[in-house]
Length: 171
Image 1 (cartoon, helix red, strand yellow):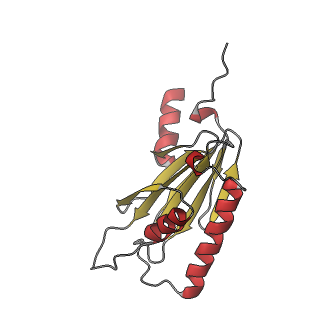
Image 2 (image 1 turned 120 degrees about the horizontal axis):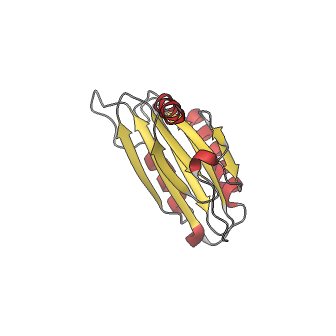
């Protein structure tokens, strides 16, 4: 009988707080509640390691209108530590998968053209890592789920909806 990966519902869930990250080679579920924030999921297929970085936007729009040199420097330092934690000294960039899911409030005015998502994608491109992204603009938060061992990422139901569904299925 072949060993099968555990279903997402059977995994230990780890909530990644804003402006932090978590990296693991273990089968687990990393979750980030995004509200004016992004989740960068980075997975090294060759090593079976992945991580989720949860970064808040300044102002909630995803645009760097209020970003200072100091805050930008902090973001880049956290991003660098996160990449090192996931990738180690990995040299095979073909094994690396990256995906950004972002939540931003609907735009209310004309905004600058660059965003934190663009900055992270450019940083990863400098490392020869392609990174797909999707920004969802809505007022309700976005819950991102990531399995670091397998590299699976998806938008999951908000905790309140998931809990209600679990109660209905148990009853």
